[in-house]
Image (tube, rainbow, N blue to C red; front, side):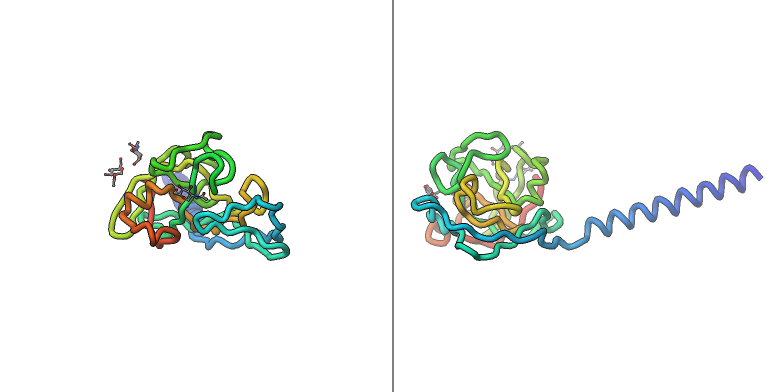
Length: 191
Ligand SMILES: *[C@@H]1O[C@H](CO)[C@@H](O)[C@H](O)[C@H]1NC(C)=O
Ligand SMILES: *[C@@H]1O[C@H](CO)[C@@H](O)[C@H](O)[C@H]1NC(C)=O
Ligand SMILES: *[C@@H]1O[C@H](CO)[C@@H](O)[C@H](O)[C@H]1NC(C)=O
């Protein structure tokens, strides 16, 4: 009798574990859907910095927002963009991870909100592969996919959910010709 009870208990625990595992796998694999939209406000005169292909919000235009990003794998697809992390440049306020500005001569990045993951990747390295090369870059900032079109974000639209926004040092390390800096399809993973 005792053995039967233990067997039944064992079987229940096994089934429960299988249910839990498949359930969490489903959650993991769920595709990332938009969280909403925001309506563009016109930047005050002389406010939006259009350097380095930065886009300025357009009055009345609807921008899609996300609070998730695609699942991170060993080669997560992303779009690399160019950002300055120095004061008074196109990056807006100081970096989210440490409230500081950073030199663009260091390989540093901002990543979309879902990948920023409430700061859990802050000051950690990711390995970026692109243009046939690899570079380790430190996450210092969030490329906010949930808000935008305000002073804090230099009156730029919310970030797409698949962005790795790198300093010029990242582009240099990948050996991309300066004329081609702007947008590049890359893959990345946690270093
Ligand atoms: C564009 O990026 C380069 C390289 O990071 C930087 O030196 C320059 O100041 C940036 N331009 C603007 C307008 O922010
Ligand atoms: C990136 O960092 C990892 C872990 O420290 C290391 O194994 C790898 O060689 C580094 N890659 C590059 C391109 O520096
Ligand atoms: C992170 O990457 C930076 C830039 O490539 C490198 O200098 C630093 O040593 C790396 N840190 C770790 C812990 O691998």
